[in-house]
Length: 330
Image (tube, rainbow, N blue to C red; front, side, top):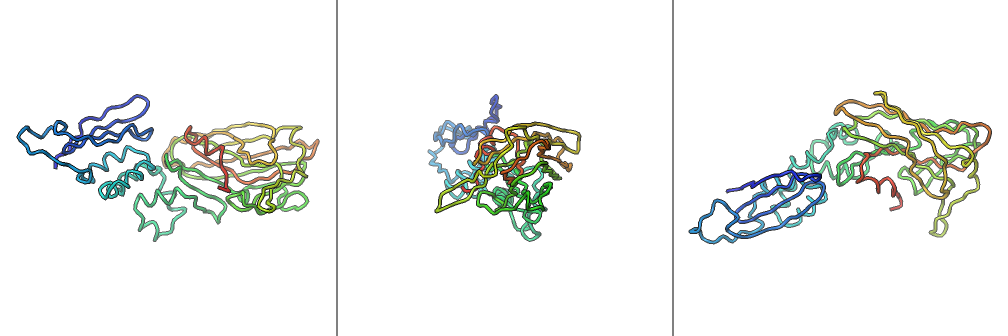
């Protein structure tokens, strides 16, 4: 079998464009930032090993060896690989190759597997199956946290329930209540009726893949419910958020810190408030993150706030829509 990797060039701002030739088939693929073309071109002039005296070839797409197909698929994003796997048996077999999905998985995938899979599951899953399972949210730490991968980029996304946060006065029902809701992935949120001193603290240690990450608090003013299949939001206790801004703080074990503040608004809608960003440079190091939400001006009370969760997401243009459209009803 004669396979020719005709060339591989760097396309500025995009990635590697690979040209392959096999028995008259020519195809080209651009990697994860976009699929510029996948075509099958037939003609004897494309195979350098053929002469004018050779009998005419009638190649078929299924004749391409899986190893050749796999060497092209490795440059694609996971959704593109899965689409091409539907073409025929050869593409389907090539798409199962472990080395392809090893490249797509985050560098800390073994660390993640230790947290969310049992021993039997870890032994029987191939790399593609690992990727597929991790693309669906998986809970850990007694159901107080969830982790999943962004399907296209393999970026690690995390959610931390309000149950895992330290909320001042949470055990005093004069101030706080735990309420059930379908609008939270954790099924329950912390609801503030009224308080003078608002303080919500959290701490999380994790082995992140290298990159930049953003931390968000998911909050809502008002208490939502459903009546006759329609959504309603009770604003009865909402007050005090237009007087002074709330303060968000983020620090990491390697000395990074971020501080921001804003007024809470948009009653009746869940909003992801950006607390700050942090950078992870080392592949195998554990990073300890501390974060907080405070409004401790005791000259006025505030109330009517739902605290759902904290999100840690890769800072990437591909995830902007994820940050802005986290809707658990869908």
